[in-house]
Image (cartoon, rainbow, N blue to C red):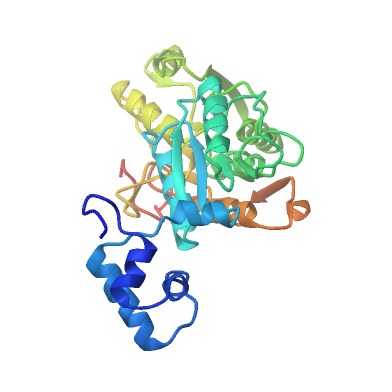
Length: 338
């Protein structure tokens, strides 16, 4: 007799149902059996509280149906939303997500890569900051926004066009003196192209422009000092600002309000990402919208694609613009500051 303290096995299910062990295996794996046998096996599984060891099953099939996802954090709404969408795509395909929050630390990123490989995951999706990241070539790695190495696809949006779109929109709305405000990594990556696109748009539209660049880890208050330096006799030097992310725009708008600079009456602000608070109710600001659903779906699709040679080195999705109250136009969507 099976000890009560031990977990039930397939053999126990077979004995309880009065069927062969192979019949239990077929039911568990979704293979056709007679209806009466299936009902008996399912009843036995329910009675014994038998749980399938999907990890062990996966090992036998050289697949664990688990994927590691490396994100800097999930406190930033952009990373949180992207993580949620990747998990949704994996779940839809009956895969499990193992989330690794790296805090943008290159050492943590490499350590998590090693741990993921040791746990026999079927692949890794990562938004990383380590320029020397080492990934076993036998494991599929899909990168977001960063070019990690040969044979590793990068999924991103058209950052250059997004920056250019922001400059052109500010020009269309009457701006003539603009600034680009950025926090980010010094590494070569796709989001860096937002600045290049913005500058290209400014040159094409004859806009006077200036840039203020902070490196990751520098206090956001440095932007406050920069803005204060551009107040002269109660007037603000800029009539348009493009912020590298919506979260930067959120802080900038708060700084401007403390300075009694009105948004959008005195200065118009455009962000990047398309962040929405409270799901689809409020945008953080007028913004360049990344198609995060498409990016997440493509990451998962590439990861599970069997033909490794068919994976393109770079997939770039188009961006769109949405007004949400921080520019002088009728808002298309409700904004946080409207």
